[in-house]
Length: 108
Image (cartoon, rainbow, N blue to C red):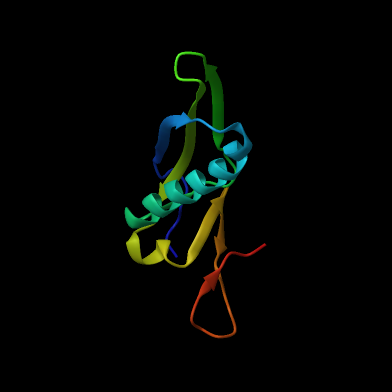
């Protein structure tokens, strides 16, 4: 595999409003999954050594929370993004294929 050193990073982010505080953290996970899917579609995978940033702020006018989620990705190409879970520093973390060969699951 070619070197991943010094490849440019791309910032992916999502902003919006959440009106029910009981689902804030569940939605954070779902929105992170959405950003990762967007990355993979463009040939990027997440940089696991750079923490995602999730901020919330209560807004009295909308009676809800404004949020922003930011994550960094690194370009590996569309084909490689299908089998790479993410990059941790210079270490490529592969996906783990299930025994059924029908679905891919992340390495825990």
